[in-house]
Length: 493
Image 1 (cartoon, helix red, strand yellow):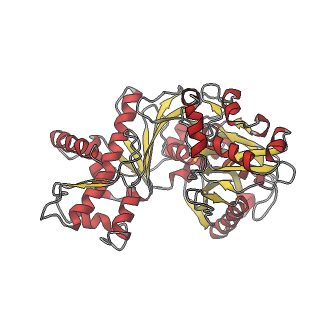
Image 2: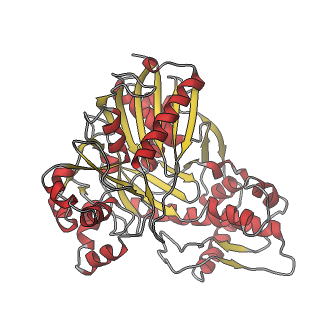
C-alpha cells in the first residue's frame, strides 16, 4: 500500500487537507476558505459546490506543497462539520438548495411544534439529542417543505440527503458511494442510537422519506474509491469518516472508558468516552456515537459545550481593546499573581450545560478600585476553565466515575496559564499533544485503520505524541473555596 494518508477536514469556514506519513509527520497542509451565506437573520447557508471546489483546491495545494503525487496516497479520511445538511438530485448530482449550516436557526418554530406535540422524550431516548434546530432532521424537513417539487422527488427516491461527509464521498466517487458513518448519523435526529439504524419512528414525525437516506457504515472501512478528478487519480480508497468532535476524540487516542478531551476553539467542545453502551444524561449533556471500527461494537460518548471560550478572548481583543492579539492574553494575565478577586462568567450568548440558561448574560463580579486590565484578562481565562470544569463534573456524574485526566487541543490550548489553572480546578493532569489539529489526525487514524495501515487502536495509541502535561499545583482546599465562590456567582448571570 502507498505510504501516505490524506485527511480532509471540511470545516464551517473552510476546508483543510493534510498529508501524513505513517509516523504522523505532516508532509503537506493547505486550507481554502469559502463564503458564508446569510439570507436572513439567524439563517446560515453554504454553497455545496463552493465546498467541493474548496476541497479540490486544498487537495491540489497540499500535494504540491508535499511534492507528492496522488498515486502515493494509500487512503483518504474525512472529518466534517457535523449537522450541516445537503439535499441533491441522485441523477444530476446537483444540490437542490444551499447546504443549511449547523448554526442555522430557521427551524426553531418547527422544533417548538414538535415539543408541544410531546415528541421530545421520544427523540431524547432514541437519539440522545434534544429537539433543536442545531441537528439535521428539521433542516431536511425544511428543504422538502420549501423547495418546489422536492417532497415528491424525495418520496420517489430521486433525491439524496447527506451531511457533508456523505456529500464528499459521493463527489469523490462520482456518485458511486452513498454512505455515512455512525458518528455523523447520530447527529441527524433520524438514527436510533441503540440499533444504529434509521428509524421510522424518528423519520415519520419529521416527514423525511427513508428512501433519501444513505447507508450507515462504520467509521473505519473502505466506502469506495476515488474517480479521477482534479489532483486525485482513480482508485484511492476512502477508508475513514467521523464528525469533527468525534474525530478529535479519536485523534486524541481516547480509546478507554473515561478518557476525555476538550477542544478549545471559539467555544469549547468536551467529549468523554463512555464505552459500548449509550449513557443517558441527567445534566442535559448529549449522548452520541463516538465511532465504530468495522467488526467491533460501537463506542459512545457524552458531549457538552461551553458556548464561549476563545470568543471571550476575542472580546477582550476586539471590543475591550485590552490586547492587540489573542495570544497576548496570557502575558497580560500572567503579569498579576491572581485575578484580584474578580470572577468573569463568560455567558456572552447564554449558558449551556449543565446550567442551560439561554437568557444568562456575561457577568464581571468583584471589581474594586484596584482592578486593572490584567485582573480582567486573568478572570476571563479562569472563567473559561471554570465552565469547562462544570461540564466535566456533569460528565463524571453521568458516567458514575471521576474523570482522572483531560486531553486538550485547539488554539486556546496553547495558553499555558489557562491549562495550568484548568489542571488545578480538576485536580487532575491536563495533557496537550504535539499535534493540535487532532480533528484531522483522527480522520487520518480512521482511514489508516480502514485501509490496513494500522492494525489496531493500540498501535495508534503508541503513535500518538505528547507535548506537555500540566499537573495540579494549587492546594485542594483553595480550589474548593474558588469553586464555591464561582458557583455562587455563576447563578447570578
